[in-house]
Length: 105
Image (cartoon, rainbow, N blue to C red; front, side, top):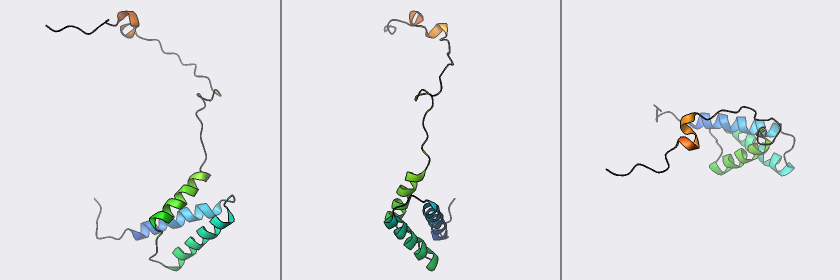
């Protein structure tokens, strides 16, 4: 259970600094974004109690998503064949299913 008396800012601040460090390590950032994120990081380092606002954090996360690796489903793209065939049991075959639900008594 969370202790509400402990401040959560150090954890947020640490996460904010980590996200900004990851972002600034990318080489494909626009110059204006790089300048803004560098300024945010400098602001967090200079002021020990500072954290990013929710809008700033959402912007940083949105830009981080751009640099995450994109994965594709190899089976649906046709690069790997799905060769595992499972036989349907007799109970579930069409001819063994009831045609309509049982009536009332």
